[in-house]
Each structure stands twice: as structure tokens, then as C-alpha cells.
Length: 222
Length: 195
Image (cartoon, rainbow over all chains, first blue to last red; front, side, top):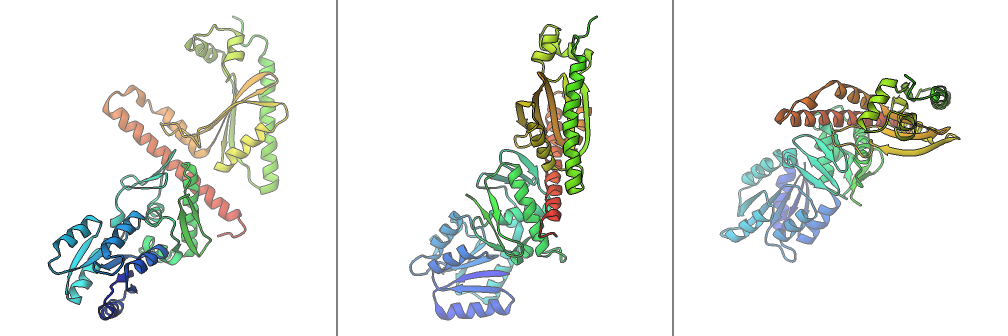
């Protein structure tokens, strides 16, 4: 499970990173908002923990920008005690949860568990990406025409749709889409990417999936 | 009563034979080259006297040879049912490239699916002065068209009709998805990388 953690207070950053790592998370920790955005651009995360008070680009700025760039990873905001306005504007900007500082490690861990548990449920809505509509209720992929996707094709397409124009590693895709299928491997991913390529063409979409077998794949919007 | 086709029936049969021969020619080529027949089956017919007259009446045309051969374009018809999606286009290309075959009109209802979910490639050719209507599609598309034809849901009015239409379209979209998956699997098997 990959987490991104942005916190400018060095001691706290080190301590929280250590606890999260000890609890089995793969943590990327950064010390300011710009660095956080750069990491979000470059890689995919299962959840993001953002301190609101950071110099330069603050937590809400990062959150607003990541949602604008269609990065839908769940976000936990760390806010100062009493700052009700921060919490409200954070939730309005698309945060999934917040935690008031100072917090107990136990509670942070519980909130991260709760946030990541939702996993693909978080993507359970209809989405549009580029010229394509994905309808969760019917598994439809629509542009000029419509086809019905299989469960795994749909889940894979949702993961791509949540990270347009960002490369997603084969291993990450297996974890996200085939977590319940231990037999799935790089060839499985490649086959399903090939299915999606054919189906995107069939509905008349301009979207394409780039990348070679075993490597990272990118849903390209233009 | 004289035939609506006048004395042209032998000419129509000859034209039908020419198009069939062109299809057979591609089948032989592809069997030699890939060991696989692109055509699952091929139906051909000259429209019956009775249904041609019925079509003239329906279209408000006089029941003459001129209407049957000069206005209506499906006196000679073929339905070519292919194994895979790419085969549909291989057949289309081979027919269009035939010397003496003129392409009058083509409609790609595979790339531009009809609202009810119908998928097929329609081609109107002119061969030796006669129109020939060719429908090319995959087994799945043909299955859907055949089964849809068996359901007389259009008689139903109100709520259930729109539900049935939506459900039939869903079936068409599922079958189309399967066609693409099967094509993808075949491509992977034939590609250098293989599975």
C-alpha cells in the first residue's frame, strides 16, 4: 500500500514516516507542497496525508491542484486545533477525512486504514475521461459507440481514468485490479490492456494506452 | 404474369456468381497463407419475385424491371459472415479491389453503430451494370441480428418496449465486446511476442 506523506516539521515527519513504515506501508515522505505535487504527478498512491500548514504551497493548495489534475487518491488532512475554517475548506476541496494535531499515532493509523479500505469503492461512480464515459452501474464504455466491459476490464479502466497521462507500473495495476486473483501476472495485465486498446478504438475514442508488456502503462488523453 | 426481372434473371445469376467467386478467391488465399478461413458462411440469393413486388409497393414504385433493378438495390444480395472482426474488413477490401466491381455506397455500422445496437458492414456494388447488396459481419453480429429478428417486440407499446430495446442493445454491446476480445486474443497468438 503506497502512501504519500507531506509534513514540513522535520521531527514529526520522521516519526510518522517511521510508524507508518513499521506498519507495513510503503511511504514516500516530502517536506513541502510543491514536492508533494511532483510526486503525485510521477507516481500513483493509494492514499495521501497532507499537513495543511506548509510554507509555499499549503495542504489545501496541493489538494485542490491534485483534484484539478484528476488525481483521485483519498486524502487525509492534518489540521491545527481550533482551525474550523481550514477543516471546512479542506473537506470542500475534496479531502476525505481530517485529523486534528496533535494526534495519537493509533488514530492516524486507524484513519489511514479506513481511508484505504474503500479502495476501488472510491471509484464506484460514473466517470468521464477525455471523450469517454464510464458507467459504473452498467460497466459501459461509451464514446461514439458503446461496449460492455468485463469486471476486470472496467476496474482497470477506472484505475487508468483516475490517473490520466501518468504511467502506472504493471505491479501497481496487479495490486489494484487483481488483488483477489493470485494467478494474475504481467501477461494478464498486458492482455487486459490489449482488450482495452481494442475497445477504446471500437467506441471511436481518441484515448489510447501506451506502454509495453511488463512495464508501465499510460492512458494518454491526446 | 411476366417476371418483374424481365429477361434479366440469367444476368443477375451471373453477377451473383461473380461476387461469390471473388469471395471464394479470398477464402482460398487466406487459407493458403494463414491456414484459416476468414468466412464462416456465406448466404446469397436473388430476391424472390414476391418480395421484390412487395418492396416496390411499399416504396410506392411501379412494379417494373426498372424499379427492381434500377431503383431498388438489393435484387442481388449476399450476407458474408466472418469469424473475426478483422476478417470483415479483409472481405470488404478484397471485394472493393476487384476489377469490374464499382463501389456505389458503403455504410460501416460497426464503427457507427445503429442506435438499437445493430452492427454490420453494408456495401452496395455495381457489377456489369447491376446493383449487388453485400452485408458483411461477424458471427456475433449475425447472431444478434438473427435473434433480434425473432423477437417481435415492436408490437409491444409503452414501458416494456423501451426496456426491451435497452436490453437488446445491451446484448449487442456485450457481444461486440466479446468480438474485440476474441480478435485481441487472435492478434496476440499471431504476434511475434505471443502469449
